[in-house]
Amino acid sequence: MKFFIDTADIDAIRELAKSGLVDGVTTNPSLVAKAGRPFIDLIKEICDVVDGPVSAEVAATDYETMVAEGRKLAAIADNVVVKLPLTPDGLKACRTFTDEGVKTNVTLCFSVGQAILAAKAGATYVSPFVGRLDDISSDGMQLIADIVEVYNNYPNWETEVLVASARGPQHVVDSARLGADVVTIPPQVLGQLFKHPLTDKGLEAFLADWEKTGQSIL
Image (tube, one colour):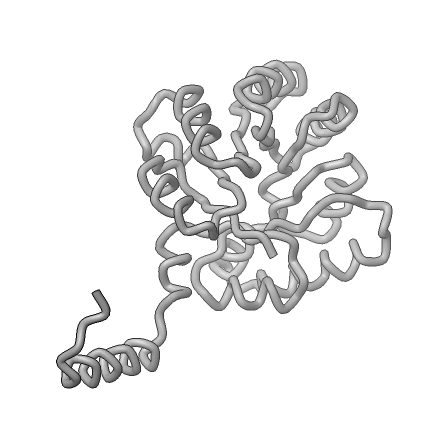
């Protein structure tokens, strides 16, 4: 399973990229607004730091403007993925980009039916939002299970399931268990995956015992 980092914070992306754990980056208008940087410049800088896919979202809602915006975004770098809303015009634009060889990420998916439409439109990725479903007392991970099951019935569909709106380590673990292709997570969630009290306790004990030896490796 691939890890995409869900942020537009270039400093955080640059630091995490050093770990080798980052396979790509996803952004959205809210994250870009939080970064407070010119959008085009920011996407270009992220693409320079990360070799993998970088999702950049269109702001338009009509087909013609989405295509115009998407083409401009795709021209920034070879690893830009044009992010489109799961609407009739968004899927129409998705098909246009797919036919042109441009990768796409169809976002704001909340049902299996929508995921089927995204696959039929040729999306590179579909992004079901598990956290937002959990917020309304629905089961976000069940949606992932259902989409993976349906997609597995049709090997000719190439759309990858990209789990979005992951709120914590358990969403990441469950995504892996269910066979999702990608999970996109904020930097702080990636950091939480490292943590376990027994790891901290064990390391503390090892260091204490090493200090007692009075030795130094260097």
